[in-house]
Length: 166
Image 1 (cartoon, helix red, strand yellow):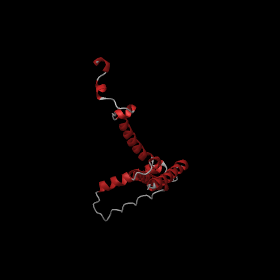
Image 2: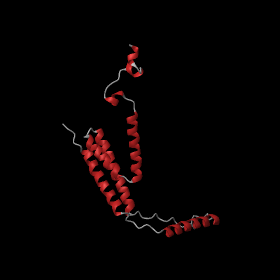
Image 3: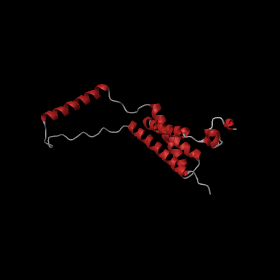
Image 4: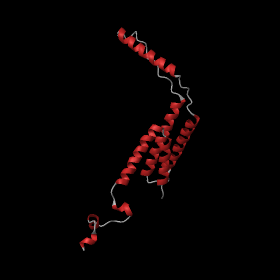
């Protein structure tokens, strides 16, 4: 009885959706309007001024303090970034789950690649760096079987000129 690759297949689907969302978001550009620079600078200067004024006035009464402002609403750009990262991470997790279930390695690899490619840039840089380190470590491990596909006898490894012994 053969295992059906449900984890890898679901990972491929989630990775493809995440990659599609990321591609549309990058191609269409940011959807939220960024505030102009002068508004940002004016708001920061106002908050610094208010903090210094409160500190010098030494207002210790909690009743006179005004309640903190609510955080700004999350825009569509932040929502798309979070959705893309979540779907990409889920695709990678399902690829690993499929690999542990001994599903088809090509399907698991496809799900992992789609998930990694869909994640936002900073996340994928870290994942790609980790994959690069693992692949370099794998290549640099000394193994006689991987060099030419044949084992070298112990006597010939240490002696540079085996004919000189005869």
